[in-house]
Image (cartoon, rainbow, N blue to C red; front, side):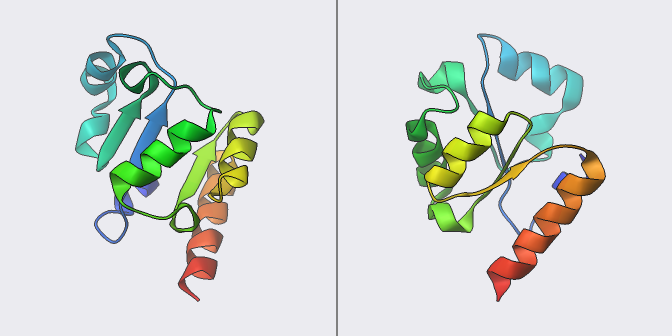
Length: 112
């Protein structure tokens, strides 16, 4: 989470979670996610679940970015594939070192 938090303020960060009622309060109490990200979208609050393409479009709209400007990291391949189909840079999480390396590579490539 330190790497994720370190991306701010240079980049907007957000979390997109398939969730249940009470998840926001639980996650904040346990992990303090709202303190380390610009936005959290909980599926139960918006009535959509990953990998529905509409939840990726909603996330882009709320962040006011184009899909090509977003990096999406998830440990569930169908969610990553759906993000890619939506035009988002999708990264499949396998381990922390790999995820950080892939995000850094994507950021460098996108800046060119």
